[in-house]
Image (cartoon, rainbow, N blue to C red):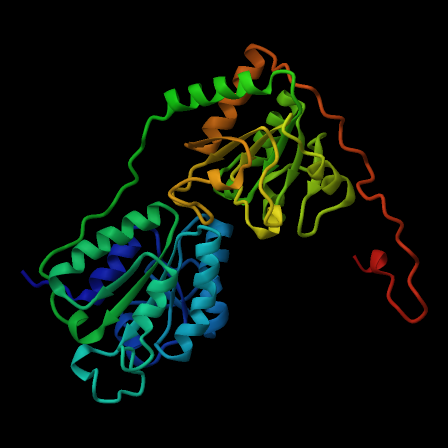
Length: 382
């Protein structure tokens, strides 16, 4: 039986995860990988390479995932190209977007030969650089760990994490002794945990004002806008969102006050700043990052976090507990399922919250002065 080389095996393994489009520029050690790709054409069948300069190529897998729900890949040679591609890699980590980044490296055999693109500790030390930022970095320089590393990378992709493959071309050209197993997402029945979480929520919101904070993790959910609207109505909860959570809230939400912190309007910011220990905050797919909470902890007496991303950006030991001043509750379960349970429970027995007023039509209280002579009227511009 003829065993395939590492390049072909890796291309086929990633194709099993739906990765059929790569972005980048060929050259250097990249050619050994792209020889198993076809030039991109609309409706292509085989994995293909879309040629585009390295900086946008690094961001392309993010846009591809957001637009299609499919994982994409980016590939570049080492040196400056790695740094350009890795800008997108940093964003993939920040937003927990599964994506693949592929870089060939100089082989160990030439570590001390002053290779032009020396990636060893004597040169750019690129492996340690990438490992300092990204957890899932896989050096493919051993046929006997090859399959294991691919399987670990598969688990990371299923957990919505970006992964990096570093290819030792001399080793990858060899036949691989073992085929990696295709990883499948293990479905955990979280019905009991969700039921307990919602019952606790129901107890805690009784007679209290509820604020709903929506983040960007809902991008993975198909009906997130309708669901957040329904939860807002069931809980009569004033609803605000992060800068990137805007796409997870419907424009018809009667309690929608707008974005807080970075890009926030007056009414939303005043509402958020009015939060006290008497309130309850429900965070739907939120990362309490600087742009969202401005480095401030939640002042509400009870904070409920709903997330399905394990070790999401901002987690410490798998939890957002450090972001709350008082009592904290978190569930790691499918967001859609949790929100539907909250809605169903509200239909069964009304939540006895202190209702928030509906959002006003005008969300700003500041007076916008007319533009000075020779300056653009930004209201007309926007």
